[in-house]
Length: 350
Image (cartoon, rainbow, N blue to C red; front, side, top):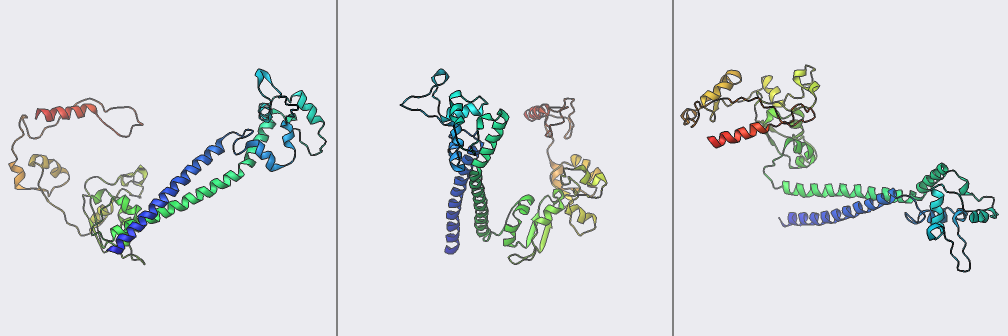
């Protein structure tokens, strides 16, 4: 007992650590993505073009070099200081090279020098995109590493969660789950190796969902020995989104035929409850004539007192008010506010 408690506690500590690391990875990825989406400027992101020129080497920086001497500062319109960033923004916007800078560029004695100012505006933008891709290569590699680490931590979190759940399930006598949940956590549930599986409303569950809830003999699990299906094959069938896959389409797929219905229709041994304990006989007659001819009434249902305030214990109300949003075929969930208010008033009256 103490050993299992220790294991759960240890797993819980590891889970907290992994969750904290996942949170840190997520924040780092968010910041990296923000940086990748930033436009390339003279100083941003990560040092911008200024840092890029230092990495590439050469003398591209001479295209934007400002030589101030004797403490003087070059000013542009509206008294803006002309510096490297100012020149780069002017170049990026497609403006012409200032005359004083043209003179400086003219006297550059280097056959490998590339005059960026002679490029057309479209060519400048293309060059800017190439610079950004080159500048952010390291950032992309970092993002890939962080994303890989995030996937590893997510897998570790799932393993720890399964470890904790398996420790809890190891002491459980009964495990309750939806058929979807049983299929989703099939590996986890198979560790418990439940020999008996009981499925409620089996007539409304697809065959594949029932089968996926069963276990087979494996290294860490035993096979299901007893399957109990409880339901009504004469009522609603499982819901299948595509009409072409249903039985009434006649295509032969019959995915909306449950395992429960198929076994009964094929003559598999089953038991049916033939005595009902809820409905008045006048109500039970409606389904007795159409669906359940052998249905019997328990004597107690014939002793119900008459409903006060109405002429008959069974009546039908009719109205001509359409459903909410009638005519809007995009609405899949139907409702009728009038019927709802009508029901409220009937209950108040009774």
